[in-house]
Image (cartoon, rainbow, N blue to C red; front, side, top):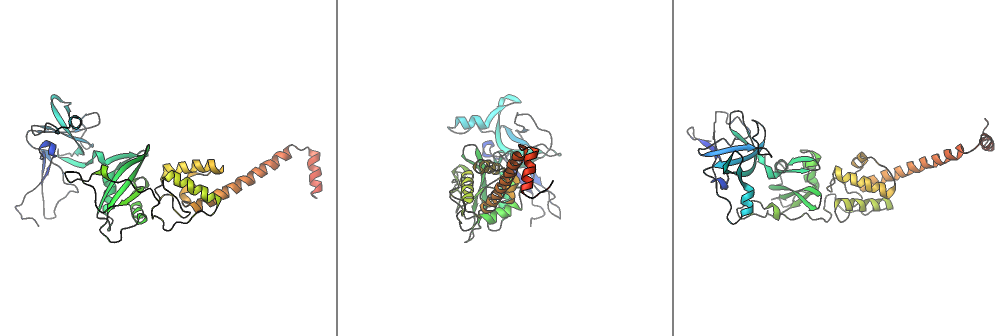
Length: 343
């Protein structure tokens, strides 16, 4: 508990602006605070704050934008790093004689003039058409009791195929399985926000200033994970071809017949690739939703076999009808007579 006369201030500012640039005095009553997020506050003296869109235009009240800082407290740049300096310390679009520091923080103006922090710009990614806040996934992972720390990144280990990978630290002797984590996230987040791979680490690589070095995080092991238990090899030709298609699409070494496509990292875009390859390999047309309904190799192989039988029956019927169409009325009557069918 705080002493009645104790004042609490939220002080915001990066090192590049000599740390403090925004200040908010937290007000308490007998019930505590009446907000979910403590605002960053208002700028201190000799500091200019701008919230701008991607065109460096000011955004209206309540609309998120990127936070830029100007003023007497601005650093000159980074030592021996002219490219980084040019990227982060830009010319002020409202005063060509001064510069602004590009923070990379997303923020918005509140109706009372205070500024609210929303998240990091570099923690927002776009995957398969969806804009995703990585911090939202990390927060969901943080709710899992057996996960001590979580970092989520968007990796592109294969050109043109960006995917979410979660890096986790568990202080438990028995770390949670990938399947358990995935099932937990599925109950919290939409499918497109669930990472396709999970990597358990003892510790995260750090930068020289003690922050997580996201670029140094290792690539996920592309060997088959322990997602679905023991490996069971394909038993039929259909299962063998289908397992090979899944392994190719999912970029893993091998797939067992009871492995779940989506638990192995599959998603709707990869599912369309599977349907296309199945069409080429088996000459059958299956709807996309069938893969969601039959998500294991064993189940989807049954769906393929059933479709082949249906198509074979349809083709045989079509051939018979085509043959009949070529017959004359007399020939048809003769055949019916031979079969003991009267007109």
